[in-house]
Image (cartoon, rainbow, N blue to C red; front, side, top):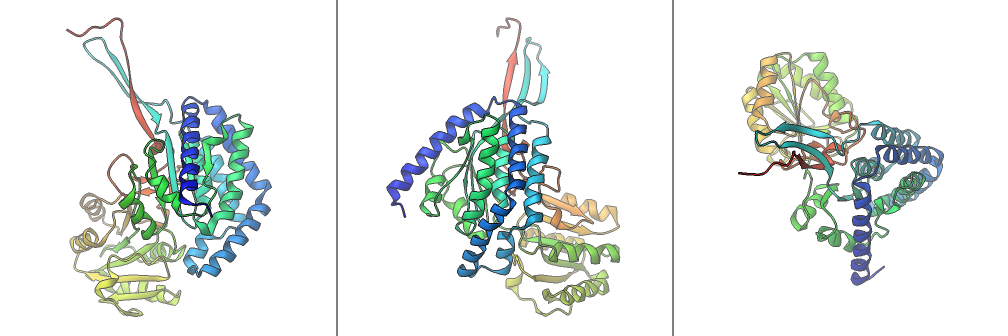
Length: 416
């Protein structure tokens, strides 16, 4: 293991190389970026076996560390997930290039013509746990938006991330782009994270992807601006006017499709006028193996105060009967994390009230919260779900990884 001085020198060098690559990427053609990503996708498909062999080593490491079943699911790769990564790279490649796009333009009486256009942020640092697909998603989105990226994957996904990263580098090489545009920190040493959080001279924004411990650490200690969400405390509210078939189908998917992702439902709220439906939903969840901690309904065990505002990331959910929609909204305001919340109802006025009275990054009506994902939003992928209100919010895709600048032109205008 390197000592801290070695890590500091390593990270400083990576930062300098990323900054130099970012200067080139800012004016790189759309065609070169597209080629790089499609070549990387082809490389992933050709090397699927290599990636799965690397992932097998990570899974063994995860078992030795005693990772939970949900965390192991996040870590695991198979042929379908590798194909999904490759397809995501191609989807991002096919998107319109956000760099240089005109957001707005107008003329002034003084003779000025003003355009506000998108420009890259510069260098993005991504710190993530478990999910090796973040390597592909983050690398691709940063490249598409003209940013260099420094990737620091979790120790448990070290080998998988390295194999995926090799394909991104092959794509850069094939397109004649600087290989330093995408860099993977080549050490498991946690000191590298501390260094990244203080690299204000070379990193423009940090994006953490992981559990509450990692994200909380980054938000507390980072000197670099952060796009992050601390937790995905996702609520689903079953209104009195909910359609039973839709409610049963949506809640089951929202909780059980993948319990370890941030869009998984963690709390079920049921209108007092829909108790019978709510009990059917709870019974269905328990039959599927979900532990339901309930108040006002017959669940696996009674809910306690500790069950509200909790991110289980497991086959567990809290459930509560509420008096009405305003009671549900009050509960979500108190215990939610402003990530994703859903209302199930056929009453448009109720849906409108839910949407207007809550300020979560993503609000849904009659849709599974598992759709809280950049790929499902048409972004190809996402680098994270931002729940703050500065710059980016919700799924962070290529467009959200840009800032803007003003381009002002005139015909010899002078100010009086």
